[in-house]
Amino acid sequence: MVRLPAPGNRVVVRYLLPTGQATDALGELLSADDELVVVDGKRGVERIRRSDIVAAKPVPPPPAPRPRRI
Image 1 (cartoon, helix red, strand yellow):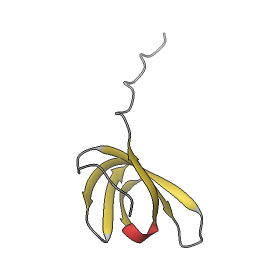
Image 2 (cartoon, rainbow, N blue to C red; image 1 turned 120 degrees about the vertical axis):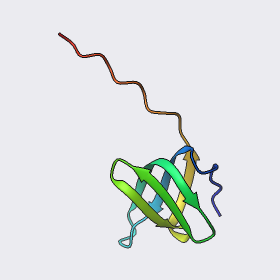
Image 3 (tube, rainbow, N blue to C red; image 1 turned 90 degrees about the vertical axis):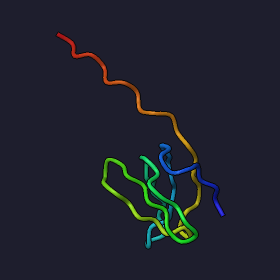
């Protein structure tokens, strides 16, 4: 089983789609239990079955927006 940080941390979770392809969910970890992991990212809230997860790790906060060029 893949270890996850505590809810509230920013994470990237790699998981398998029904087609067998892998994809990533990047965002705030909202919750995690023995069956389901919930990540809130740019694509919205993603509910991922724990059995589909291949890898997961904490990631740093996103960089600050760059100033607009004039």
